[in-house]
Amino acid sequence: MAISIDNLRKGKKYRLKNYGEEFEFQVIEMPEDGEYKVKDLTTLDTYMLNELVKYGKGKDYDLDEL
Image (cartoon, rainbow, N blue to C red; front, side, top):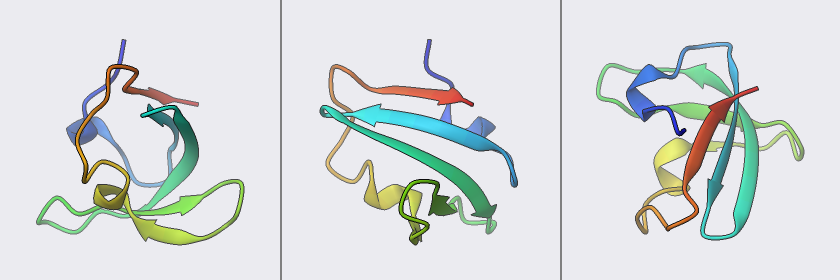
């Protein structure tokens, strides 16, 4: 069962599946406005979490802690 994005914690690692793609990331920053800055554990790129879900949640959406 997927956890809510509101339950993410700084420093923890997560796996997100959405529209057939899988991302493993670590939360780096959690500003007050709900924007999460994350670091991809595979490529070490940093980006905002909302970029991964900006097109909505697919039928395969799943968010789990590693």
